[in-house]
Image 1 (cartoon, helix red, strand yellow):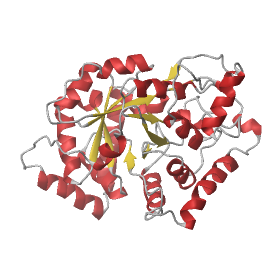
Image 2 (cartoon, helix red, strand yellow; image 1 turned 60 degrees about the vertical axis):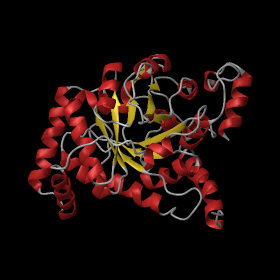
Image 3 (cartoon, one colour; image 1 turned 120 degrees about the vertical axis):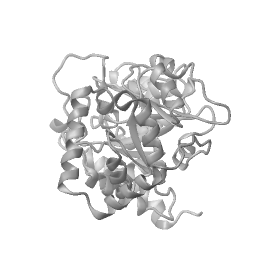
Image 4 (cartoon, helix red, strand yellow; image 1 turned 90 degrees about the vertical axis):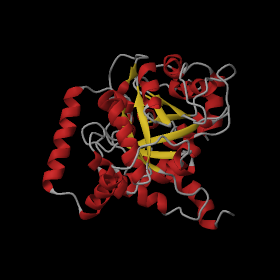
Length: 363
């Protein structure tokens, strides 16, 4: 398909949106006063490092939602799930659309850009732009998919934001690049949430193995399949990763684990049944400093064999430099660069060559 005049102008519009966002007075981007530390913040996937109390809170939210009465469209989808529940559950070797988009040739990495309104201290933006503004930026700068942290407590978003993201992506239908699949990143504890996500127009949902366990993972994969959705299973250990694959997962995301080496240990010994393929995602935790070490970690994860990186808070560590905006960070993570010859640690103020290189790959 040949790019249209409108599609050719979209990248420049996206850049303009991003740079306009970053033209806010500098005090809005001032780093929070705290000692510099290389410690990673688990905030980029807050839902995956939580305990039983937050799970119970989510269950209470679901009960309240059901008591208030879901919409007829959600109830119809819920009935569709229940009608399919008596079918024999079989693990399919078929590769879904999202899995195919996230899994490219060896030596490359794809990016899932997560939208959220709340940051846990790692970002410099005082206020995250509306989803309809960032959605085209994610698309034009090469993300493979967009996720929305649809949980008010941890992400500050609701399904209204999911709908807005889906609708904006659909506006790119027939253009180059085309619409990105949207993922609902929420703590799933009940089938009604899968119906709610499908009603919002998403292509996939996330399920956290450590929260629901193997049996529920299998059930939720089956429920999602009944509605044509794929499931990304969040895992935090090698045992959970293997359990997720055994439960039927075809996409797993290593969450709440800091450092590329530690992430790799989670999938290193993964045993995948013959005939099946599993897409592996590395969730990049945001560092609590002004550097962009997350870009380098994405490169290392790529070199270790991960198919994709999931990036959230690190996208919003921007604003002090006009070339540092969410789209540019996505673009730099996808760059075919080697940590042996280049470093993205440009904002440390050390190494002029590194600064020039980062500027080149981000522009």
